[in-house]
Image: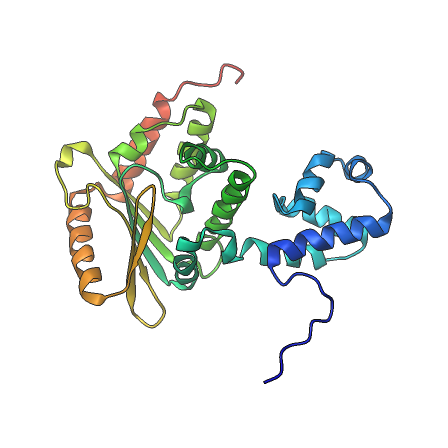
Length: 280
């Protein structure tokens, strides 16, 4: 079979192609980054980072660029492809990301950190930075994690159940305002019909998953795979007997956890303990 002939010579990678198109359109318009910022009302450095591929920007910024360049929907479509691109995640997570996007339901247990699907940008940034990730990769990873949240939104979103060890809610962020925002977001997501959040209190005593964050993905064909992770690595488990053993441990932990209604009350009590912003 003959090799596909390259027509444009431009990148086939979604993030890089998006950045290239932004540079091409601006250059063709004859505007500098500073002039573009002045015309659209955003800091010009944002557009510089977008053209370097360091950040994707928000959909509002991209829509404004589409209007400015007279390319209705083109840049937004490229932006959507870039945000959905699994290659933005580190290599060990890419197959998991692909399966996560296909799953019809997800179950999760957290030992000490909220799942990425429920994190706010501020929470994600502080946790990732604590893990040693630095700029510009830090901003890229935060945006990638925020893009994952769309999985739980809209029509046809999969069912998601998470059990949070009480330690997750006791480890507050250093920034009290960001921590308040995270707890508020968590309480809001707990009201969604496709999301169930359970709190496993310290009073439940020892449990079988006390050192293991784990995900279970139920795939369209009925098969379930598991993914375990810690701060340094993750392992995708597809062998049915191993998945079954983990599910047995998960079911035991779920029996010890609070109901979704009681768990939401617990989150709201935690929210009351966060110091108020003196400016409000």
